Image (cartoon, rainbow, N blue to C red; front, side, top):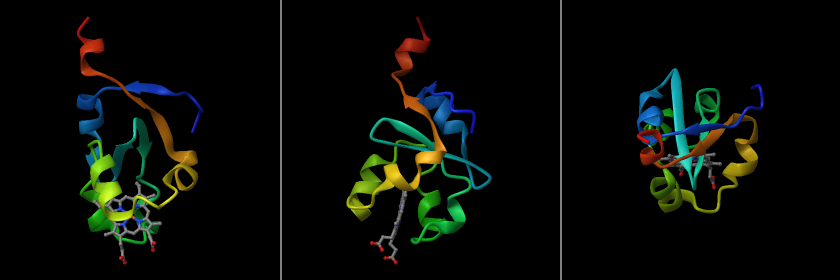
Length: 88
Ligand code: HEM
């Protein structure tokens, strides 16, 4: 989108857990997968299992070889950061 990289807490990430507003994190990077949803070869129902969460483990268990960084380069929202930083 605008190219701005946001710092995203786990609780902020968790708000984007809907089919029409879908974010997930993989290895510290947060992606907006709302547009990708319909193109996911594993289907919408599978991808939905990971949204609103750090999906690193799910992703790696199923297809660690998939080049998500390339596929989702236009979908980067920002970095997943420690919740504690927001409580200071
Ligand atoms: C298949 C991409 C997240 C479940 C695939 C394939 C790609 C892909 C490219 C085809 C792999 C192949 O044929 O070798 C992505 C990307 C993701 C993502 C870019 C990051 C957002 C997930 C998540 C889940 C999931 C979070 C489950 C919770 C699956 C499953 C298949 C699959 C089950 C296998 C489909 C089949 O065997 O026909 N995905 N995926 N994916 N994906 Fe994902």
